[in-house]
Amino acid sequence: MEQRTAGRSGLRVSRMGLATHTWGDRTGADEAAVQMTAFLDAGGTLVDTSPAYAAGGAQRVLAELLGDLVNRDDLVLSGCSGVVPVSAAEDGPAVPEPVRPAVDASRRGLLAQLDRTLRELGTDHLDLWSVGEWDPYTPLDEVAGTLEHAVRAGKARYVGVRGFSAWQLASLAALTPVVAAQHPYSLLARGAEEDLLPAARHHGTGLIAATPLAGGILTGKYRDGVPADSRGADEATAEEIRHRLDERANRVVDALVTAADGLGTSPLAVALAWIRDRPGVSSMIVGARDIGQLTGVLAAETLELPRAIAAALDDVSARPETGHE
Image (cartoon, rainbow, N blue to C red; front, side, top):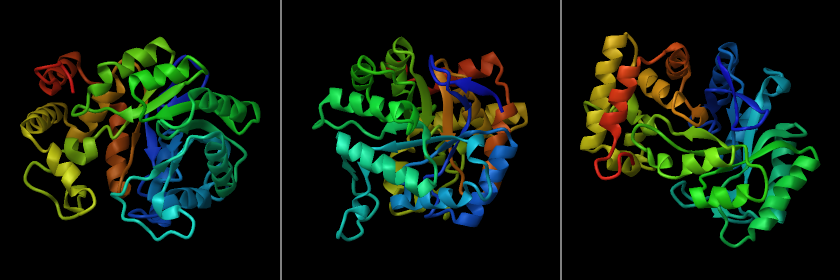
């Protein structure tokens, strides 16, 4: 798998990263081990985790694999702090997943969560440590100073952000180097092109595309209805998926299916190849329910989209009023 630098830094990451957001929830430890092995065998290095995934379950599953199954030095571990799972609050009851987690990017909050993550994973550092969400109540110079402290202390090699808007990224990057910005980006979510990508380019920050398959819509699985085992059938995520199943999504999926038929591949692979090759994208984070799905995802690595197909997808996915979402 091809390796790229994250922005204008020396951090090299595989241009496809492995998501772990379902680990410890819909994906058990045995299946996670199979996925990790296949990912590494394909040359992947970037593994994405967070203490907010599955209320901490993802990190616990990943910890079981480090050392026993994989060599820590073979991975580029990307984690974050600042987003606190509500169900993990002390003495508090578990809260359904749709409830928004708390945000705490204070120096105390960020470093305490980083230390817990390092202890849980059994490692002394994260290769990429990100602020998990914008915190309007913490002074930005405090956030920047905390990131710099973690790098000086050797607990993080590089720092980034997740879910920041363009002005939020620019404000932080003006105070300290930010090498990566993780943000939703797909054929159905092109809002990053409006201002985030230009801001990232200006500050030497690479984009890590999150949800590049738009929750599975771009695989074509919803063309003929909602599969029983899909996110669209899950009570916790159904509304989000169904809200996006509009006429534009149908046009994009039809175009993907046509392109895939002509290239002898899958709509999933075409959608991932389109995102992978967009200017400013350092990597993309892709998850899979099982090894069968992951095998299809990894197949996208070798697909090279003809320029005419990439341009056609660009056109069909553009919103008329802005040129993109």
